[in-house]
Image (tube, rainbow, N blue to C red; front, side, top):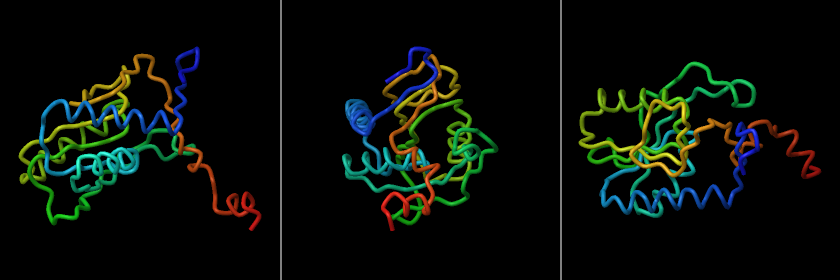
Length: 174
């Protein structure tokens, strides 16, 4: 649900999963057959996992981080892992790069550059995101929703960003 001022978008678990299914349909309808899904951790892990299951493709993971301050709401310096975790040795062939959103586009541009520069066995690279913000300078090959007002997206699991183990103990009275 988008707030009236267009500054916040609240997503339920059902909406989140429906959007991932719509993303899967867009990818399928394109007719592109890929070998591996490479998700960007953390935001692309959930969509990557679901797409991996739907398309029955191996899931590789590349860790990136830029939203760390203020419970994950402030963008800082971008860190990109030097290594990719993959069940098939080295990532190669046709790769679908998955993240949750193209916000500014900075992360996706940097990752695509790194993959094209340092991972020569990748023969084709396409990208998929759930959301693309209007300010993004990156256009994914597959995207479900364009958000021209650039809202902050409140994903259903982000409450865990500010939840400590001690708070869980209190919640469950342990």
